[in-house]
Image 1 (cartoon, each protein chain N blue to C red):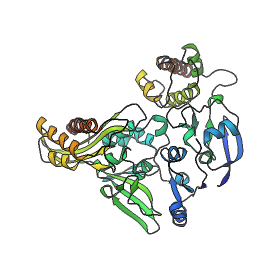
Image 2: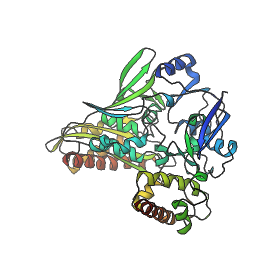
Image 3: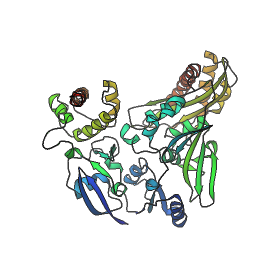
Image 4: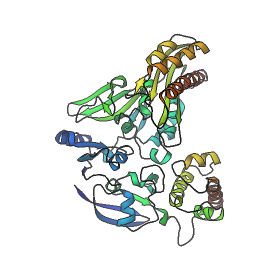
Length: 291
Length: 161
């Protein structure tokens, strides 16, 4: 399958890219790793008139620990997360996620920024970044601004990025001591999107859960947090009853649709079970000293 | 529709061609350069038959525009033997019967080579994960894992020698 025709630009700098996007308006689409966009173009689900390839802009690929946060450049390949000692040491939720995105070949090309900017609720990073309470750095004609991850996803494949803005960096707050996280995904086979997946990041205070954020993958039209489940856990000791109540809350507040991957009831039950398991694993990690 | 002149080094040889922006790397390799060892399988970023090495990373060449590869160094299955001598992976696939129909083999070889470059002594499980972007519908994978282990042993022995 061959994509429709388009014009192609490969700017060397962010300023050049932003100027192009401003000039071209709606006709242009940003090409990052291309692992979602190119298949969509081949299926003719997307037929942008112009592609602005940001792959030739220097210095957009990095994973840096910077004091109180981990900074990830938008063009960082997924594989770089798997290979990062900083991620392995302090960000187990992110490492869990990086290992189950698509397949190893796709992860060599796919980018973290693209995964988020595509705003596909079936993608894995949205739930994980929601759980981390990440910040998104975007640069546009008006300069640079920070977007809270809670404000990034506004619709199916739709973000709050303005026309002409480019997502340039993701910042994950450094987890406090006694923190832990986990990402659990059920997929039919390697490379498929999740039937359902749950991302948990929490902090313990003694035996109780002090703070917790939970993100859900592919069970709603917009990447969403499981806020009722979070409320069922925050401040509580994670007894079996508390976990079950949280799992049921998450199952009730998600909004899956029936498709080839399963019926609605099945997906809700997966969310219930995965929420409990992911919270348990996050607690184990928090207790094991892994932040 | 924009056209672009691109230059790539494939299997050590430099090639310059003018292409449409929408030309996929796999079609550029097969049709413009005549290197048909790289296969088109699923056409949907699933099967890995089109896997090539792009600046050292194994990628699905059906999901890269050729214009993105301008200036890149690419290796395909045609480039992995040296002076007519099979690469230890090719030898392993031969000795351990790592193929039946052979359609997935070029992609398997490129993926496996990248895997062994990152991890010279993989466990069977690591091999299975490493080639999980490459589908084989004949072998059931056991023979492919054995073939890659054969090559890993041989590469380590060669290095030690």
